[in-house]
Amino acid sequence: MKIKPNYLALLTISALISSCGLLGPDYTKPNVTAPTNWTSKDSLSVNESTNIAEMAWWRKFNDPQLNGLIESAFANNNNLQMAMGNMLQAQAQLGKVNMGWVPTANIGAGGAIGQMFDGSFTNHSSNPIPSTSNNFNNFNSYGYGIMPSYTLNVFEQIKQGEIATLNLAMQQQAVYAVRLGIISQVSSSYFALLGFHRQLEIQEETLRDAEELRKLTLIQYEKGSISDLKVSALDQYIATIKANIPILKTNITNAENALQLLTNQNPAKIKLDNNFNNISTKNIIPINLPSDILKTRPDVVAAEYQLQLANANIGAVRSMFFPSINLTGALGQGTMNLANLFSAGGDFWMAQLGAAMPFFNMSLYKEVDIAKSKYYTAYYNYVQTVRSAFSDVDNGLSAHDSSTSNYNEQTTALNRAQDIYKNSNKRYQKGAIAYVDLIGTKLNIDYSLANQNKAKMNQLNSLVNLYQALGGGYMAESSLTQVKKFNDGHDI
Image (cartoon, rainbow, N blue to C red; front, top):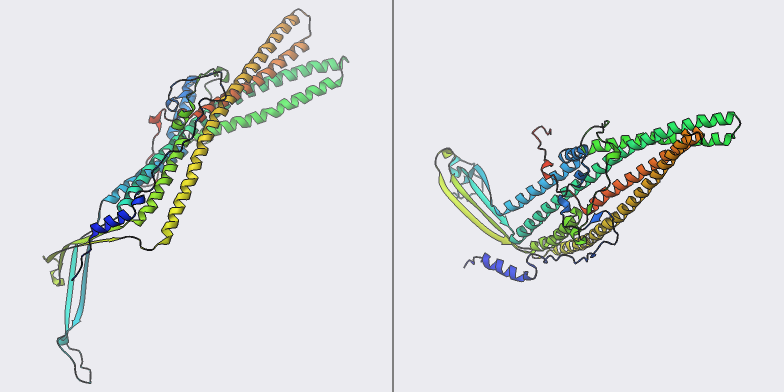
């Protein structure tokens, strides 16, 4: 008696055998204790419920050129387009996995021709008998039809769908991370470009004043009223100023090229529509609670998705221990006479069902160990990312507050230098002091202007870094992010 296998029972038994880990371990979010408050304080920050991720903070500067550069980078930056391409790939991979639930079908055809020995004739003589047409039968045949097939491991399919979904979400966070970086890089490069231009103006003005002072000092030396040491000191000072000018010009070029690269343009000079003096540094910074960083920073969110992926991979490997169902069939027409190729033949159908599961495969157990070790790594990567995020924000608050204090002190020093010059000018007008002394106080203003300009550049840079640490603005202006499609010639 032929015993037919009960595949439903086989599936049930195998499920019961592996019921301790049907779909892998349940995911539990690591309990990383967030600080209740930031250690560092910022005099310009306030606590509020603003969604920083959606805040276009750069618009507070009311600078159309800065806004336009960021918008251009959103639309044209190559790194952002690559990140979008990776997200599209993950989206397509998810669709492919979902299609795994759908059977496949092939269309096929075949034919055969040959001869068959006549089994009714038996040669009992000792000598072979030459072959004749009576001893062989010619035959030919053909068949064509649809051949569906369905191979599925239900539990593996579920886990692969979960993995593909998590991967898509993680790639979305990668896009957000690139957008966040673009905002910071464009803003810092733009502020640096404005600052270097202003610094160059100050250095050139300082050089003119120093050379004017040297002329007057040289006259005093020629009259014998001073020694040559004062002239030599001025020569050294002038040489230092001249040495700074080419460095500033190089910095300007680097900032321009950085902006051009961020907006996918060739190196070129950038005509500025604004002046560094017009940039206000008194922008209130909204600081939410530390726990909000876990929700807004793309790297933190991506790290958690990575952890969930590692957890799902454990289940994916375990699913390989479950049986795979294989269902195949055929439906079509066939005939044993090739002459009937284009005429109706006999209809036929066939169905086959099978199931198989690993019986002895020790490497699968090691695959589970590998998946667990990857989860271990992803777990501590998530913890480290969270701790780093907290540290970045606290450092950013401290840096911005100290740079603000430094800028305020440099502004105070500049105001005093300007007051000294005004008083000296009044005394010069009355003949109380020489013109050479007045030029000396003017150089003091130049020196204070340079220091204030540097302090302002540092303050703006710390402001940009702080917003990046907070995860500010990457979800703003999302409509400007465009995915460029390739045509058949691979042109954009």
